[in-house]
Length: 421
Image (cartoon, rainbow, N blue to C red):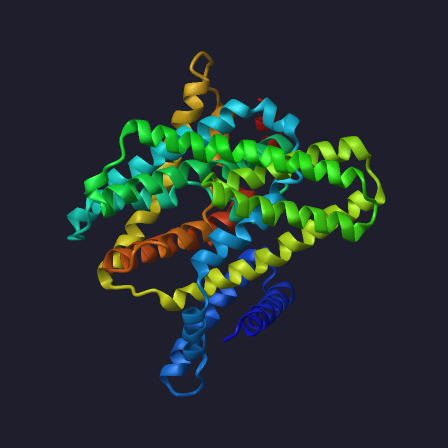
């Protein structure tokens, strides 16, 4: 398949599944298209085995040509992050900055180690032979909440602004922490002769996070300066596209965090551009453009996630491990959220509302395409195939079960009370 054929293939499937979901299933769109893509992929496998249709063969040919990991991590991710950060008020981030920072940094680290230690111990009891470091690597891959899944699913839940900002803010900022953890643990696994020191890890973290933030602010300010000088809708769209793609590419070249730099660009453009130019028709059209880009790419991405099921190589052992790891990942998320919040509220009485906040943040920590892309980026081998199977199980549970039930955990009145606490 050439790239144009790949785009045609994805757009046609996305349109078909979105239509079927809206007409018949009535699920949240991204969940619906993912479920339909999974069903179509599995049914196609059996039809291919029966010689009825070569659908499975077509999908396998597609995945031979399509590098999901590179396309998401080095391409589409910047569009999702900018569209998500564009509408987050900085004042809201400022109000809960310590909670977001604690969840993004401390929470991700705690979850990584809980998943790694508990997973290695429990899976060892059923005969899974996998190294502790590789399970720790899986913990780093699966622990950060996915901004794509979180923004795509929670935007229709109707959360109060403050709770939505905390959940979205954490998911947008914990990527840099996860990338550092993945890099460090990968270095321990694949380059045993050059173990990174604490100083190197600290320097890497500062370079990734702080460097990405500084670069993003600079690109955002340049973008704002250019936006103030134009009024044509096409010019505004082109300027923001250049800021997103150019800023992300520059971040990769400078070896700083591309995700954090694009989040910073989105925050600067979304908050200060409107203040300086005022709410006018042109700015509204720019918002509509990025909203549409976000929603279309959401559908395409979740179609891809559903279709990824065909490249899995599950065994009885890996299937059993997947069933075990889902509750372990949920438990690790609860531990990390509880520890982060209790650390901040150490001088306060822990009331019923705060425990409800912990429950909401724990169940609302969704996973999506990023863990799968990171798993696919690992060196090929049996361990990677094993990690991919359990990562897919966690993502499928997160999107389908957590995504469809999070709006039923609390009433609207309870959510408003939590936001006020």
